Image: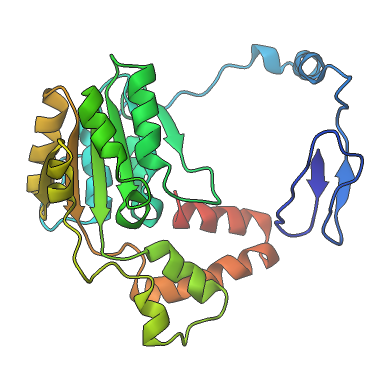
Length: 284
């Protein structure tokens, strides 16, 4: 199914049904029925356009430098790009803390990326378990937010039980940061202290290094870039499961967080080239 709309919309199609719920102002084009060979049609289209002979533009090999100083989410992503091993599987459920992961790993050695599909959180650590069991000879790195990790923290016990080669990186910013963004996107800027308290993880403070150790996973806590890089080097060099707790400030806070909902709401009304450029700036 293909939906034409003047603004981005959510659209859900259910195979086998003849009717679809379509937002106002949209046109639905049925590209193929279940009885038609869509793959063969796409192959013929590629041949007709000459796309079958097109050569992909490959990213030139490049790594970011070694980060230093006070630890931030951006520096964690930079360290991952600096040290990412060949043929690694990268699990990304870092949410707001992983905004710079893509540009810092773009030129890293060839690797696979499994990322959040949207809708719910908590899949990062289980995804890492599945990847490590499916590909035991490949290093697995899972970048996960502190809030989302608490949905499935018991996956650490499975990693220890099966001695999986997983390095779990937990961004501890003591907040469900993305939910604070969503709260402001729906116009709840004046939410009271009680509502705000539902979205922070500051009391009691979570110590993911201790949680990991309690489930049989080697766990360390990093508060500087130097500590984090050292911990990641050690984890990648030692078989078995590891957890690195990266204590970082929120990536989206203060004025930056207040401007983001306004900017997201304005994207549909902007010229497409400008909207695309802003999207790349927000989440490269």
